Length: 506
Ligand code: NAD
Image 1 (spheres, helix red, strand yellow):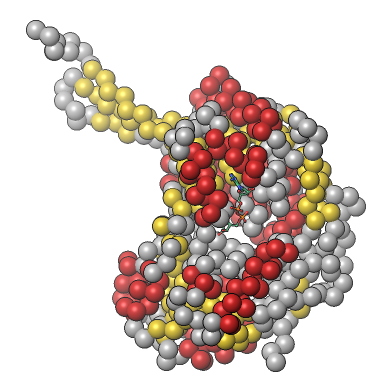
Image 2 (cartoon, protein in one colour; image 1 turned 90 degrees about the vertical axis):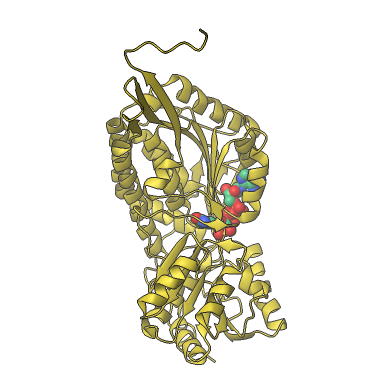
């Protein structure tokens, strides 16, 4: 029996009282129109982490009205890139200043490890700085070749009022993949964080106000998909919805927005394969596979949750992966040594376990883990690092998002077969290959149907590099200059110069 590494009994003190979060509407913090609230119980510590106003359709109505009025009548959409960049840079500095406070709340609501939460907050500040650079450098085009009397200009304009809806797995990072880019473009926004992790978005609202963000530019409504999310996607005054979350809800948002034909940008689920060729640097590949599947307890759209290993090296690779998996410290997310924390909810833990059990029933073999992991002294939910081998491509565990610390191992004989298994999928978020042969890597990079390809690495991301999915993993892109483009309209201005227009009617 392989012994799993567990971290328990952290000495970090919990906050004396839950965080209190309200809606931010037109520059003012407000309770819900009906006074309702909801609690978030920490998935790792079992304490009440936050108490938040529970939004109603009336709250969304007020927030959208504020965003619309500010866009149509306010100065923000016409402000200079310099002024917008100045605001974004100030917010980045304030995020750095409050990193510890934001990270602690992120841990208590999401269950992720504190070291990772701090790194994410730092990464988020970097996104605000990168977006500031785009605010100053974005531009359209001019056409000076339309003939002697004509000049064409293509203007880039903010798309308008944007609804931003975010999930629970990277609350602060994901809102920072959207909001600073929308603000750089000159949009006004209404944000709904996940009901599981509302509080760090509220802190972001506080920092925006402190940085001098004008009232109505950023509005926040806390609460659930119904009624808050649905009102944000059906309101005719909203021009665009940017959503990160499940493919199921993404599809319902496309349906909800069709009535008003809003632009929709979607970052959805993934079932991301890594192909391990026999000539791979196996030490490096094993470490990346372990990182890819256990990072954020596997609750990650980019989770490397299915690996395809060449049959000649499969048993050796599984043995090495099992040994390294057992060394990953699972446990108390507030302990700096912990690398994998709690599972977000009891329902979700049951779903993870059901996938493992169903795979075992269908003939797969559980080589490590496969059970809940109680942690001494913590009233939370944890799941063991789990490796399921002998998985066939048709099993749900090979095709669907498990969203837990569960690795599925499949085998193949040829690169051609591996590419065909990789592409036989509903999702197309990311994919990777491990080989010391550059031709093999390039062949894979060009033929795998995924928005991001990693060769000899996994889950490296940069603000400069666009991110998004193909197929049912989404539409549109975040980050890079494409991340700004999503929030821009293109306007054509065609101008006659000097000479009179030749008449149509003689
Ligand atoms: P989810 O779809 O359940 O919820 C996401 C958000 O949508 C939440 O704020 C929720 O309240 C809201 N919502 C729910 N129903 C709604 C409705 N009918 N209308 C409008 N909004 C509604 O997702 P989740 O469980 O919070 O997050 C996990 C999912 O997110 C996974 O599938 C994961 O792959 C995906 N994800 C994708 C990316 C990416 O960049 N591709 C990143 C992170 C997470």
